[in-house]
Image (tube, rainbow, N blue to C red; front, side, top):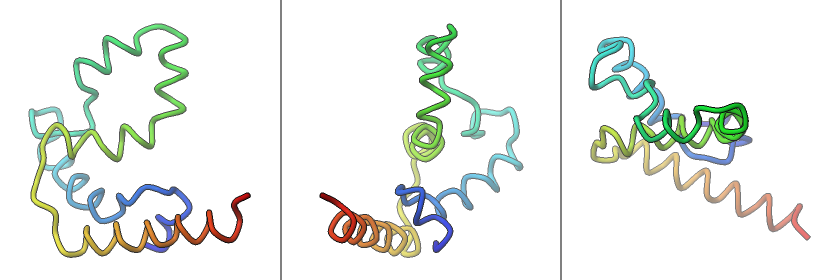
Length: 96
C-alpha cells in the first residue's frame, strides 16, 4: 500500500487479486488485462493511443472492476481509506 500512494489511485490490493487471475485465465474472458472492445475502438489511431498511454493507470485500475466486478474485501477498503487520506494530506499541505 505504501508504494501505491504516489500513484493516487487505490489499486494495490485489487491489482493483486486481478493480476493472479490474469495469469490463471490468460487470454480468456476473465483476463482483465485485455482491453475492452470500447477501448480498442476509441484508441485505434495515433492520437488515441497517446491518450490511452497517458491514461493507462486509470484503465489498469478501473478496467477489472468494470469488466469483472467482485465484492470489495476489507483490505481493499483499507487501501482506499489510506489512499484517500494520503491524497487529502497532499492537497492540504502541498496544494495552493
